[in-house]
Picture 1 (cartoon, rainbow, N blue to C red):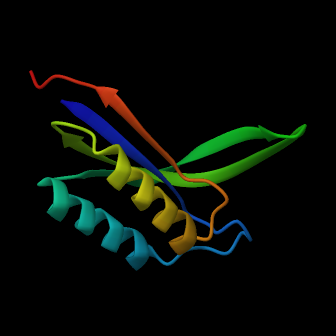
Picture 2 (picture 1 turned 30 degrees about the vertical axis):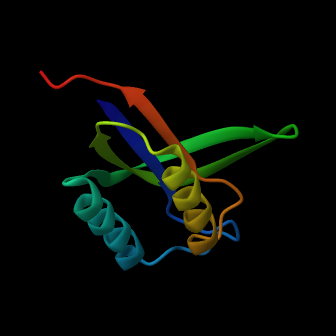
Length: 101
């Protein structure tokens, strides 16, 4: 079992807020495709990273799904779609091994 986390910035790379219904659509689509999803959306997380010596930050939510196997090809295509849809330079999607207890 794998836990896949999709990090979704709340603003475009031009600092324009993304409409909440866009995230709702992404959340529902993932829940439908994988049989369930969890969105950590109450208080946005804050990302911070070094971009060629300049510290940058963003606000984001995380959506997680549990999958038996990670279809890397599908997730790579999905990440590229999210980059375009959310007007981003990068979208982080991570997979972590997990067990149901």
